[in-house]
Length: 256
Image 1: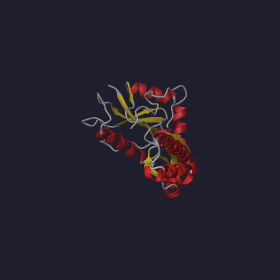
Image 2: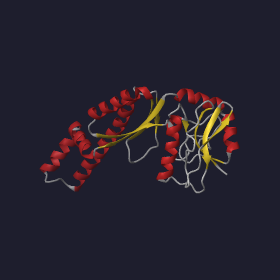
Image 3: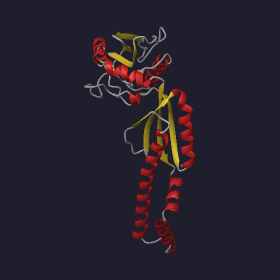
Image 4: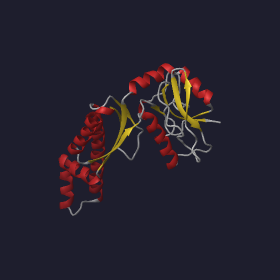
């Protein structure tokens, strides 16, 4: 039977509530697997597991319950090992790395910030900041809309200016918020976002971080900011030495 791994804790960490269910239908009982000074919060892995809402929520609930008692290194949804022995052996082999991560992440949470442009607002800003675009727009207007080539040129100018603004705003998002965080992790590139960044934040300092987000909103009204958190620090559980990313305990297996 394959073993589903929710997270890694110190062996002294309190066990999850008795009778807690995890992923699967019916829900597989959650248990603790100890190996030396570390433990893994696990359950049997159901066959054909897919990222359905019920199982995603079950994964998150187990982590929330276990994390309420202290620091836990969260594995992403879909972290499966061949069996309990494999999990135990990895815990022993990577013990120094996981203990260092537990110390580093103690008392910290993750906030993920995604940014997009408000299309109308950014076009207005680009127009106001770029005299050449304004002049070309006015010339086309006076020419009854301008020729095809003139309209094409204007469109290319606007696209280039918006692209430049995207790069500048992405840098502003990171620069503004990283001062209120302990660490930063860039998310995967996506055509849907101009910025996708995770920030490691002291749990007790979350108000300061969120205040920085609000200040960013005020200073950049052409940005739409989506903040998700507090989360377990998924983006900051990096693979241990000689442990390839994507392995059973690598911490970056299946994107939620």
